[in-house]
Image (tube, rainbow, N blue to C red):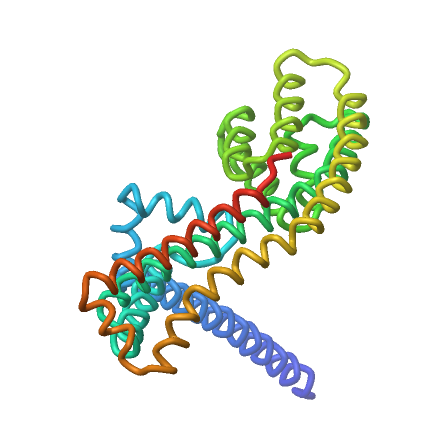
Length: 310
């Protein structure tokens, strides 16, 4: 009697059982690795949340100053925590105090710390302005995208979501923020008003007001958006020309401030210890105070003259 077919069938069955068992063990191993990875990720998240920097960031953001700094960082598009920004400013201020204290005079070290704080705020202002200008430059294209979307029958929230995918940053990021806020339940009007607060601009305000009026009472939104697109395109060219004209004046203001600070180091380099001796007498303090005041006034006046609201 030939037992080979039975033997082959038995071997085949055993092979299939081992294969199935191997697949089960493999899938169980994959599941365990995923579980361990998830636990490790959760542990990493918990570790970061319990780190001293994270706790400091939470405490700072609960204060009014911390909320203001968070708002300024968001407007400027700076990807930095409030705690990191505060520590960076503090470290630079301490470094300025130490350097100026030893090179010039202790009293001027405190002035240097104040100057460091002003420079950081000026940097945030500059980044906010650049981001706002970039967003404003994208408004004509944004108006055209919204016009085409609404003409195709899409609702405004859907049109904004679509525009967020088509436009580059910063318009894309801001519109994505609006779309996500609407998806999680924030009213359409509040989401647009938050955008107005993050990007304070006359052109942005006009566009948002048009969208809000259309959402409340309807109207010829497509025609209005097309007219706004043409108007914003003309204003963009005007803004570019004005910025080009005023760029030299802005450079002059910062050069004047640099000359005021540099003159102290130059005077101390030519006659070592002169600035320190001036801070030890009333007449020297008056001269230094008058010089710094005049340089500051010149800087502020030039900055005010070159700042045009249009």
